[in-house]
Amino acid sequence: MTEAIQPTAAPPPRRPLVMGVVNVTPDSFSDGGEWFDPEAGIAHGLELWAQGARILDVGGESTRPGAERPSVAEELRRVIPVISALVAAGCLVSVDTMRAVVAERALAAGAAIVNDVSGGLADEAMAPVVAAAGVPFVAMHWRGHSADMQSRASYADVVAEVVAELTARRDALLDAGIDDEDLILDPGIGFAKTAAHNWALLRGIDRLQGLGHRLLLGTSRKTFLGAVGRARGEERAPLARDVATAVTSAYAAQHGVWGVRVHNVIGTVDALDVAEQLWEGSHG
Image (tube, rainbow, N blue to C red):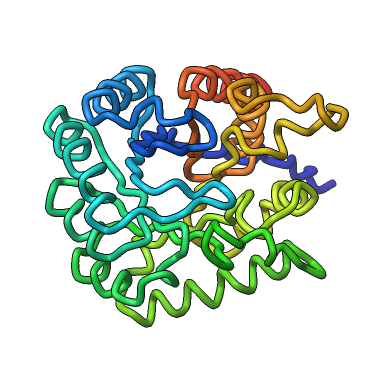
């Protein structure tokens, strides 16, 4: 009698890296300019690092729906001093920008990653800058600037269309000289998406993983988390969405996502600790 072959446990998913958000903007939807002053932004970044963030994402342009863009000079004024100080303190820093000149200056100041919510579509010079620098590049699914992006939230099948559009963007970036291993993809939760679209993308995260690149997930404090389980007019305020965010981070961990971008690092680290323990306890 042939001995039955016992199924082997699936390998544990990789624990996502925690990317802490350092907004140096006066009009962020989540913190309302609390870290706009460079010294405050630096102190906040150092606090997030001490709490367990392994990347600090410094951005000087709000991407909330309806936001207007700052000038290039103003964006540089906001981010470069903060990046320089955090790098000098030993932190791994990414710059959150859609502008090639800002990315170039940020890399010169010590940033190691470029996180572009437009995936290089907002500035045709972005891909050549990143390719020449040979640094990791986060390319998000994007359909337009914040001022009118929600008017483009129309999909017959949001998961299939985001996968297709990210695939096209991936191919264009590779053709532009960005190394395959340097490319990180982001489905763009909340960007030209309704709440229903966001939930569908989270449920379809394995199809996004099927693109074969590292995946960054950014759900933190977004409106759809404020509305879930609440009646209209009783939605959670942005600062009250950290528990809901942590739940999505734990969910992402179970699906092997490379990184989660969050405002509240402590809650996410706790959620990932619990998710990791549960996984190890059932598969150890």
